[in-house]
Length: 123
Image (cartoon, rainbow, N blue to C red; front, side, top):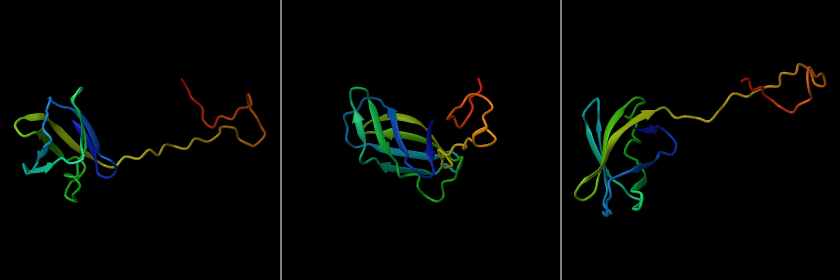
């Protein structure tokens, strides 16, 4: 299953069946409403040696897409289906992490060794 975030970069890299076609189509089917949609992939890169396809999809950038939505996905070339799987929509993720504070109560008063650490790691 591929993860799609509502905002941000949604670049996918997947291993496909070998293909020499330059016409690739991404087809989606909403698992809840059974609505079908398709998009011709442009600006993708394909590594023929490892059969790795890297692409960005704009198909899910509508306001009707909600977190938790799931889609059946297929990528086809001119003749065959070269990949099939699923895509699930998630809320945008951030890299914000908690800010750690020094455990020393006052400036200049040290309980143990002098250290510049701003957090404590417990194992």
